[in-house]
Length: 231
Image (cartoon, rainbow, N blue to C red; front, side, top):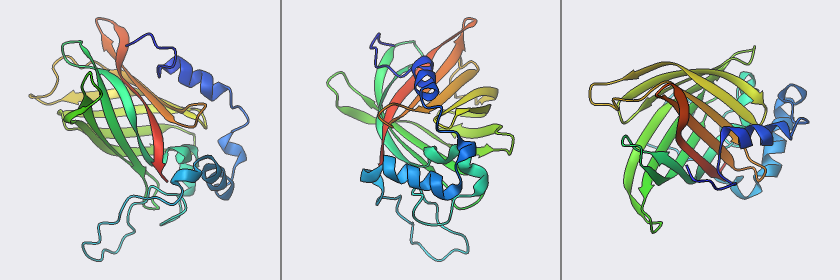
């Protein structure tokens, strides 16, 4: 990783989260939480992921906008700020340890049930800042219990299936640790267990960091800072 002081790291996500102690999810009801989100992301308030419109189904469409579609399940208030469409850039390391820049679009949505859907698309960016084509995709689900125990399951296009457990750091940050990491025969050979942290930055962008165990120590693997573009 670069030595940029603005780099997204677990430490600066924790610092940001700790600097907002007044935002305790236990002090907000659903309406208050939605109104708070609406004030923070005015520019994206009218946008949403498009419906498929390929035929009637007896279940609601996914929505990444808290003001549109089904109401967010009460059990998800601890994850509410994550809902939306986010886009930006980050840094990653390939299987040879070389660093590269990537772009990312992250969609976190719901359908009124007690889970969030998670869909990430990334693309590599060359040294001149131009996209080089599609890279890794992830899809999965977030759940959180009444005791604030977070469960995240996801599958990667690179042949990874992983389960994370964690908890909120507060209502602006969420910390996770992998409990089970499985890799297919054609997947990455040296992927160790990992830790992830997601958190809202001072500018209300979403920062996230993935660290992996390499040679007995946790090392940076991927990180990004994303702007909310819908929701």
